[in-house]
Image (cartoon, rainbow, N blue to C red; front, side, top):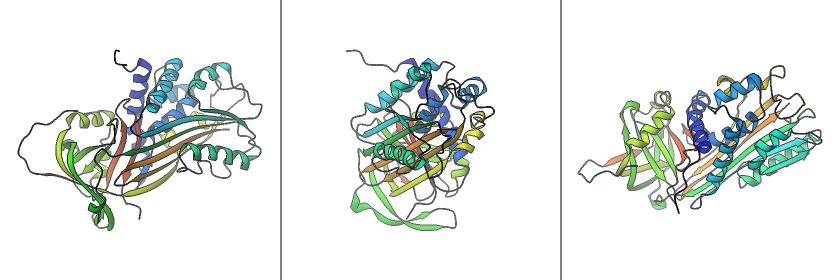
Length: 383
């Protein structure tokens, strides 16, 4: 049987996600400290919204999300992406979309056709009973993220004027192909800044990894694969303790591709902190910075493709969790939109040491689709 090649809609959506990710990182990353989010979750939730937009709102999301000017192709691409991600067998990767509607709220038939293919859940709720509606949505996310994201909708967000909540949830759990040895984990210093140091549990493993020295970024990069090799963690480590802000300024899709193309299999001594992180972010201002403004204004929002009723977006909420340990990684995220290689040759060389004992950026990649599942910065490891 011939190998299945990615469809044109899937390719266009993968490229859109690849362009969207560094732009999103650049804006979220303007705030100092740790960050962690799921570009694919945010992208998917906003695509659900995009499919119901018109006029200026359509143009803004088309540009901001790097989509093609064809709703049918975008819909097919999102459907193909969901299916492809769910076919992963060596790790646990689950992604789901849901739509919660006000009772008696009628969606347009064309919008139903564009979205229902990849909706895991379409449910009517009574937003006037805001506490019960909040609990129902949070329970769905809690279940889809294996109890890692428990309250995507905080109290007071839903009101009797709420008509529609779009939610995307993603969960990942994978074991490293080459696990870190627990007995090798030692307390070591982590330099959050040139003057601030704290002790962390530093994991260690030695082995063959895809690695490159990224001279234009003044950084090292390594790819740590999970079982099956389809998903990997790309870690980008500046050579200077305080070098991450300069490295982050150069993040583009082309840079990420170039890093992976430059990689070769090398024997590397890897040191990586063991850490857990939970991150919550309201995305309204982030998306406005990226040019997606009109959907938040009741006077200018055009969501006329969703329903006859006049709608606007009140909140875009995101929450993410990650646990990196010796065995592997567990990560989850949810986004809610509320509406009111190469192989290196054998040669003698100095040992390569990759010691992540100061701030670094990391990305969980799906090699099959090219999707960036999660992205983050570890500035100050939680204790």
